[in-house]
Length: 210
Image (cartoon, rainbow, N blue to C red; front, side):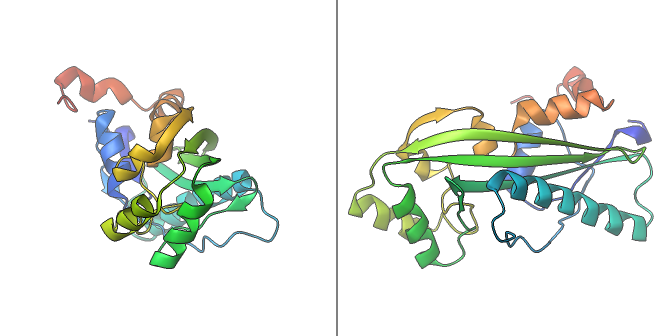
């Protein structure tokens, strides 16, 4: 593979790596970009997702420049935000946070936004925003307590992981399922292809086949 095919993922998320692998893409390097994810007062969830994804891409670019690893590389970053109206839900780290999120989501609809940011080898910055609407069933006390006990909610935006047990809570989903998991594949692949990354190179050799 040529140097122009290097792909750097500005994340350490196993979910995002698995989604890229599902599309036949294997990142050449993972560069987790830890930035302050605190929303600005009055910031819309859409704006937050776009700002954080760009911030992660820029942080990863700075790290790569410092060690001379940027030549010929595409840098891909993403950030997922869960919101009810304009209310942004946290990435739950404590059980109380997860419980509050799930009680808020119970029996109602919410939106999941993922901001994508791609930095090309020539230094161009391309961004996309993807939105998915999700409706949860009304959760019983047993369901809530059992899910909290599972620990799946930990470090998940909105306090749940749709690809796990919480998939049983979803009554309706409008938009991209992979967006809710953490990386919208349709938009990600289109973004890469539009900038000249040969996404289908690995398909020819059966990479990504299950």
